[in-house]
Length: 94
Image (tube, rainbow, N blue to C red; front, side, top):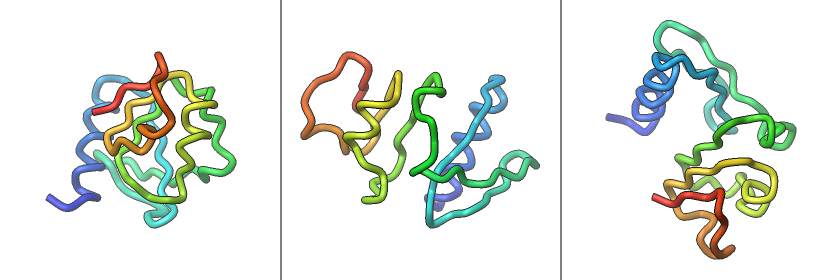
């Protein structure tokens, strides 16, 4: 499975559970998930605090880990990108 395929399957699973899903990826401006076309959200303009969960699946340098930790209410970091920042009660690292 490609990285994009893995992303699509995760997003489709979340949508199937009733989640409203957005994604940010400057390298992938749009994807189709479960028959629904999604446009990438601009990371720089995204209101991270408006989301119940921010899931980091890529290690792209464009995604500032300090901003992620300071602005998001709950973070699941699958790339340990926030590791050097220390422990936070709202950050789960996998």
